[in-house]
Length: 152
Image (cartoon, rainbow, N blue to C red; front, top):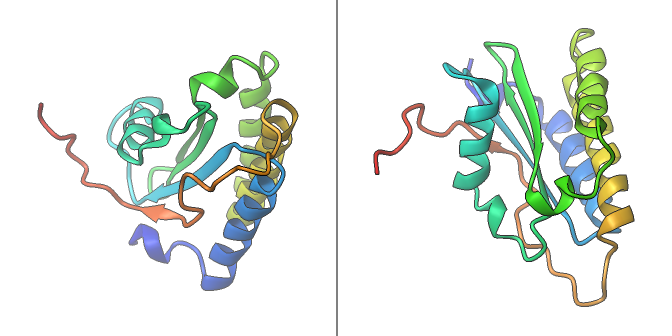
């Protein structure tokens, strides 16, 4: 299964709407990336995708990535240094548990949407929206990157 066909158009819109809603009240940035498979440690892959998407380049280092590898049933949620230094201990684990509870019931778009809203609340608390805020990263879901990491 291609990652881009994992969600229906309606489900993709639900996730994009959750991102848009969460970002309305914060300068933080949220991305969702979906891949067919992940042949390595999921956190390593998510961190690589985070960098590949340029999420570490936000002004306040307050980006959050929701990463899913659908065929392998792996997922990760990672935040950049700015947000990680502010959220309570165990926060990301609680977000992952929200995802997990939905995912085991096959509610992937719903789980992502709930997790995105939770992350958005923390972003809003620590990085409130300002009048000069710009949307630094796309709200669109991204799909599949080459499986091999680029050689340096």
